[in-house]
Length: 403
Image (cartoon, rainbow, N blue to C red):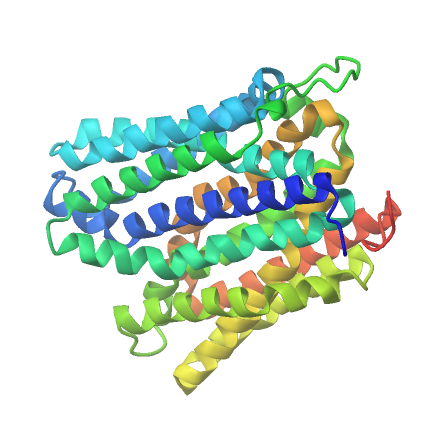
């Protein structure tokens, strides 16, 4: 009779809880996302491009709060900060169901961004706390699967909510985040509240850590470049592609569903491939795959099948890059600075959200969509090269090795 070690059972249950929380949070976010602009126009009284300000202030809240959120989580307890983050997100997004004017809408998106800045780093740090080193790459891959399940289910739930009203989308999102909070309160062990681990106190702060850790800084820079190039597709893709071909909103949304399904289906097989390769090679391949996918958008006039291949290649790049980079950061971080390191790395997505949408549209307006896709491919390739060189220089080469 095979006896499962208690520690293994605990870590498996903890990982299941964290994946469930990541899935629920992704459902909540994805339920809102397709309807924010139309809600801003029709309900919150924000006309024209002003609706885009909601995304900007949310990213600003995440980026500014993220500079200190990791430090607070490491010092006050990752479980505690995660639960506070979820409570703040739930109340902020849920309150939007009752907002009808621009100023409160902007304020609540800013507040939501501040609270959300602690969610992803705390989840990643808890994975590192609770999961054995040899299972980290698989654990981060599971989080990625949960996030993409949410991207499939969320828009459907949001569409159902709009049958009641646009404001109901935010009520549903707030309720989903409340459910996520309950799961975390029940399932995440309280022992993770103390994270000092008897390690010496290290002067901390995101900017200070980036300044002193050149590898972390290089990975953030590489990830930021990758995020910017991907955001040109994700946020501006419909506008850019319509310079080249006829593409409906439904067909464009369908491409994101295809990408999400690709990750859900192939993330675990990809994880086994990652385990056999040098990490620098994995990061380089990820950059190349996204670069090829973005390059194929140059040929979008050739039909929808080309777009499908393009987004599947970009999804493959994502499923290689994200778990690999997260695992590198998790293993590199001191035990009492795990959230701080993950918060620093999460700046990559904030950089993409803050810089990508506006620059993509401006470049398309000045030079045309073709040049945007060429530049995006070059940037993606450069980011993979930077990340690969950085990791290989640190001899962080094989995931299969024991720590």
